[in-house]
Amino acid sequence: MKPGRVLFWLTLGVLTVIFVAPLLWMLTTSFKTNNDATALPLSWLPRPFTGDAYSSVLTTNSATPVLRWFVNSMIAATANAALIVAVDAMAAYALARMRFHGRRLVSATVIGTLFVPPFLFLIPNFLIVSRLGWLDSLWAIIVPSAGGAFGVFFLRQFFAALPVELEEAALMEGANQWQIFTRIVLPLARPALATLTVLSFLTNWNDFLWPIYVLYSAENLTLPAGLGNLQNAATTNYPIAMAGAVVASVPVLLLFVAAQRHVIQSVTHTGVKG
Amino acid sequence: MAVDARPARSVAAPAAEPGGAVRRHGPLTPYLFLLPFGVLFIGFVLIPAIYGLWVSLHDYNYLLPGKPWTGLQNYIDLFTPGSRDSGDFWKSMLATGIFTVFSVPFLIVCPLGVALLLNRAFKGRGFFRAVFFAPYVLGVAVVGILFRFVLDPNIGLVNYYLGSAIPWTTDLPWAWISLIGMTVWWTLGFNAVIYMAGLQDISPDLYEAARVDGASRWDEFRNVTLPGLRPVMAFVTTITILASANMFGQSFLLTKGAPANETRTAIMYIAETGLGNNRQGMAAAMSYILALLLMAVSLLNLRLTQRRGAS
Image: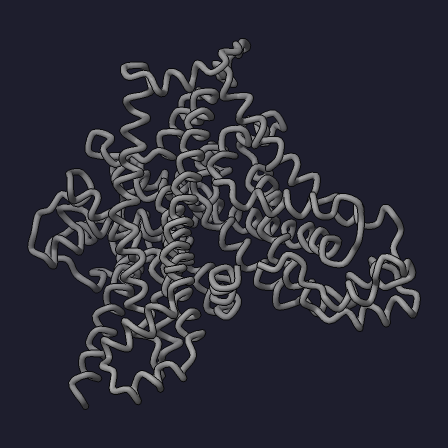
């Protein structure tokens, strides 16, 4: 091998270790006892290998009901992604394909809000959500973020770039707008809808600032909010904290592996074409 | 971004032709399609944007019955040295500023290095891209508690392998180094993927021409790669500045603001004031000040990058 290639693989190898080692450490610690996890010298292999941390976080009567948080997160992220895709697709279709009074104003307003920093909505939305009686409930996690404009902007671009011939042919045959939307446009837009779904799910699953303040009962938390509590406990039990972190990571890592193309594309799309 | 990317249809359906494809819907149809999103958008984006301003003009605590109008008093207090909040608020703004100034260069350069490394054809390229991107799909909560453990002074992996006893999360400058390092580890893949797409867009002909001229690798990088990446770099810089200025979770989880609130960021202080202590009026005023400052920085950044692009 030429020295250049050796250097290349060496750099890549070192980087890979830096990126993988913490994740591996999280996994291996989650199978340790707390004594083992905090004993020097550190060991990469659990001695003994135990699933205690998992059984203590995954039982229903646990003081740290990770299983419950997992279910809450799953419900919230799924519902939020579904809501976003449904309402954004309809709005984006109207903006991309219909002529109506105020279309420009609506487009400009929606896109304009993309430039407003999200923390500006934190305090007023907290007050609005409290007035709706949604504090400490999953509604607060599912609904408000669906008002965000990103998906409308993203889908509108995609719809606008679709060829109109199919839609025109359907119109000739007497289809109405709803039929065209559901039977022609949505199936054609599947890749964009999938990207938006995955992105919305990931964002909601990982959201941290909002849930730690609007949820407070142990049984109502989402995983990120719960994990924060796990660590804030006076004496951190590291295997339990790491088991919780593994439970929170596995679904998104699986989703990333399965939908890698969509995730990466959404990044490059916002980056290069935005 | 395209203002209106529908050339085919605007030609097919001019205004004089009411029977054209676009026009064949009832007058209410577009509004019905917009309605569900519109309700959410108005309720959780438009109203809050105005409502927040209104709240900031009151001594607002949502648990108390009286929420007296105080006009600009919250803002005046924040600019009055020695008032209850001004010291802590500006200290938190400074923390955000320090984090932004010192994290952004690393968040621009490190991902570029990785992107250049992965920008050649070799077996397993996709695999390595996935490895470097993977931390980004984990939330800040997972990354935060993981790094809290890995950077633990006594039983953390980092001190163990360095043979050191560095107080990574409780003393300066270590706390900043930890926060920046963790943020780079967490988000490097995001910027790297954007750079990789940008690198793909640079015409191979330019590299070919450089090689014919006998340019060295370094010349190639300086005269072809960097100029080709300029728009992408301007974009990455902008979003990275904004992301760093929005930093919350890393400090909240890793350092908890330690030592002595030196690493408590502006968003962290706003959330504590408004949601932890229920002083929503004051917190809303702080958010508007931070937002205005960020807008000013964005505009400045836009001007600078545009000028650089023009010259």
